[in-house]
Amino acid sequence: MVDNDSPWWGPDKQEQSSQTSSDTPKNVFSGDVSSFSTPQAVNVTQMKDPNQFLISQFLIGLFLVPLIAGFLMSLIVLVIEPGDQDNWYYDSNYQPIFDDSVEINDEDYNTLTVDFNIPNIDLYEIDDEDYYFYTGVSVYGDDWDDYGDCYFDVGYHRLNIYVESEDNRRWYPMECYGVLEDYNFYFLKNGQSITYATNYQSQIDNVQVEGDEDSDVSGILVNFLPFLIPVAYFGILVWSFVSKKKSLGFGLLGGIFVAPFSFCFSMIFLGFLFWDL
Image 1 (cartoon, rainbow, N blue to C red):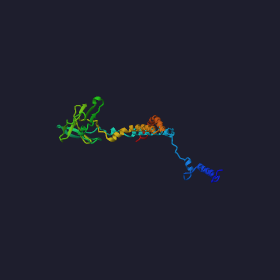
Image 2: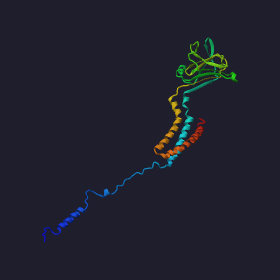
Image 3: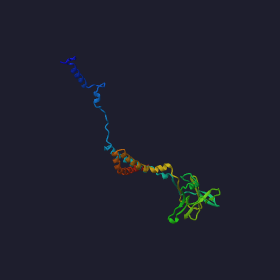
Image 4: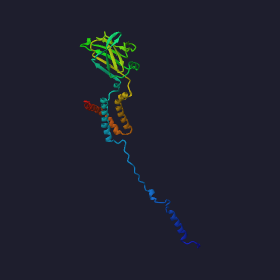
């Protein structure tokens, strides 16, 4: 018989207790462990599909943008004058009266002074800047044989050919043909006024002047306005597909056929609107 100082239950119970304590899971975290094991709820904003067809964008591209573009184009055509007209000038005087006189080369000439609505520039500046300048004198008759004309063109005639009157003013000779071929016509320009001198004794039917100047910046911009609207339209079209607004893009493609009708109807509407203006 073996003597055992330990109680009969000691080792077995201690081993059982040790095994039991080792089998029990220990909570090494402070707080509620369930908060780590439960999935966290996240609010995610639902993103729109860029390829989704939107009827509102399609209708804007199909009708609204072409209608506005057609209306603006017709407004520019009817209201805004082309920029080159700002630089072109023309004025005339019908059946003027030669009620004054001057002595040129010891001969008396009837004279007429007309204040034209033209730029205040002299002939030498016109010649130096290569501007166009033309002035003419005309008489009409019952048939072609009674027609006569005298003219001076800066681009064709030279400014170093002139005659002086008794008051030392320079008079430029005009080239004549028709019934005026056998008469002398001269003119001088002083700012916006042109004085004509002639030994022709009958009635002159018309005197006129026309010319141009360099284009200014505002005139050039006005000329480009009709081209800016189509460029802007196709720019919006390209932008709509690049930015994935395909609904708007397809509408704009269809609007290419709508815009001409908008332009025509706008021209008719604005034509009646401005008819009495």
